Image (cartoon, rainbow, N blue to C red; front, side, top):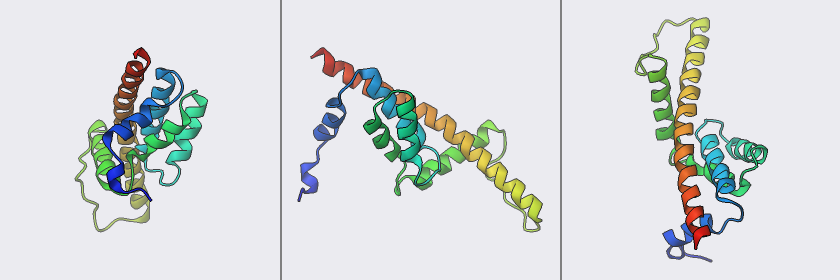
Length: 147
């Protein structure tokens, strides 16, 4: 059984460097995975990432790994940040409290507004993180190919 000491940064980077395919192929896979991982579709993020990586002809393995950007340790901060970003784009206060005297119709409206803010924020944050992660992998793979 491997211990935690066996896992080093060098081994993690070698995981990305040892992928077959062009730098663009690998970068597309990871970027799609990171983008998919930013959405609150618990349990389906990996499936969505792999599906879209297959459609875009990207690295499926890196797409699956990229979805791990959201995990039990990052769920709350990531989705809270996504919600805040979505609120900024919709020019709404993210701290608006829900009134106590809501009727059922108002509750559904509040839920749809919350969902819209979260999905819009997830799209924006996911796009930015996907661009960053894809660029990093693209440059790592380019350095590997030049050697």
